[in-house]
Image 1 (spheres, rainbow, N blue to C red):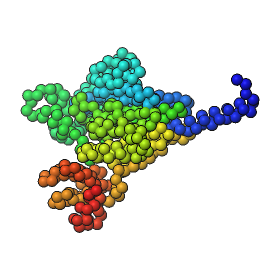
Image 2: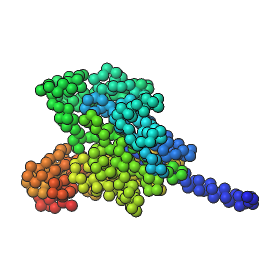
Image 3: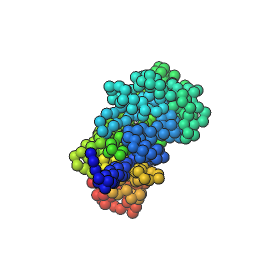
Image 4: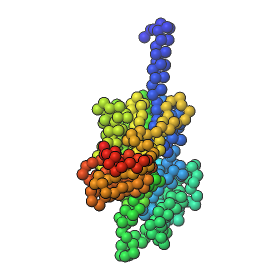
Length: 443
Ligand code: ASP
C-alpha cells in the first residue's frame, strides 16, 4: 500500500485520536475500602493492560492489608474462629468466570478464583477442593488450621504492609474481635477452647452452634464492622469490562456459610456489551435477587446505569427483609458511567479514570429522597405504637406483624409489612400529630 505523506499523517492523527478516546474511557470503580488500590489498577489500564488484570491486582492489594478486617489475611472468622475466604472474578468479554468459597490456606483468593477460571473447566470450587487447587498451583500462602483457638495467630497485626507468606489468615486483631463478640454474649466463656466444647453436644451448658450463630448474628442496624467486602470493576482501552470481589464474609457466621461474594450474578457480574456490577453487605438478599446480574440485565434492557441500580434496589425491597437495607450496590457501564446505591447516607464508593492522580470518593444515591437526617417518630399501620426513630433496633409488631426497622436511624427508617406494604418513614422533628406521621410513613 502506497500512501502520500500527508495521507499517512492524517491516518496517524486519526489513530492517535482514536487511541486517546479509548484511553480516556479507562475507568475503575471500587467499594470505599478499595480506593487506595485504584492507582495501581489505572497504571495497568493506561499501559494497555486488561480490565481483568487491573481488578485482580487491586484486589490482591486489599487482601494483603492486615488492617482491612473484611478481606484476605486479617479478615474476620466464623463462629468457630476460622477465617474462610471467598472471591469471584468475571471477564465481561467472554462471560468466563471463576470463584472460590470457604478457603483457609490462601490469602489471595482472587488469584485462586482466576485460576479456577483459567485452568479448570469449572466456575466454582469450595472448601477442600479449592484449597487443594491452591496447593497444586503453589499459591497456598497461609497456614491452616486458622482457628482463633490456635496459638499460631501472629502477635501483631495492625500493619498495612501484609504478612509473610505462610502466616495464618487469622490475625491477633481479628481473633480479639471474635473473642470480644463471644464473651459479650457469654461472660466467663473460655474462648480458648470453645471449638472443642461445641463438639461435645452433650454439654447442657452450651447452646448448639446454630444458636450461637443466631445470637451473634449481626443485627441489620449494627455498624458494619461485622461485614465487609472489596469490589473492583474496570473498563479498559479495548472496552472490556471485568469485576473482582473478595471477602472474609459475615463475621461469626455458621461454619460453611457462603454469601453473595463468590456467587456469580449475586455479588458481582460483568458483560462488556452493557456494564458491570458488584455488591457489598448482607449477601443473603443479594443472592435471592441475583442483584448484580439484574443490574446488568436492566442495562441490557435499555436502562441507564443509575436507573438499573435503582431497579435492583426495588427488587431487594420487594423481599421485605430488613437485611435488604444493608446492601450497597455499585455499577459501571461500558462507557465508563457509574452509579452506586446504598441505604446508608454516609456510604461512599471510589472512582478513578485515566489521567487522574487519585481516586475520587462519590456518594451513593440514597434509595429514598427523604434521608434528611432529622430525628422524630414513626408509627406502625395499626396505630398503637410509636417508635422513636433515634432507636437503633428492629421491632416486630405483635399484632399487625409489621417489622419496623430503624436503620442508621438518625437518618431514616424503613417499614416492612407482612401484608406486602413496604413503606418508608419520614422522621419529623416537630413530632406532628399521629395522623400526619402515619400519612407520611406510607408510600
Ligand atoms: N457480601 C458479603 C457476604 O455476604 C459481606 C459484605 O460485603 O459485607 O459475605
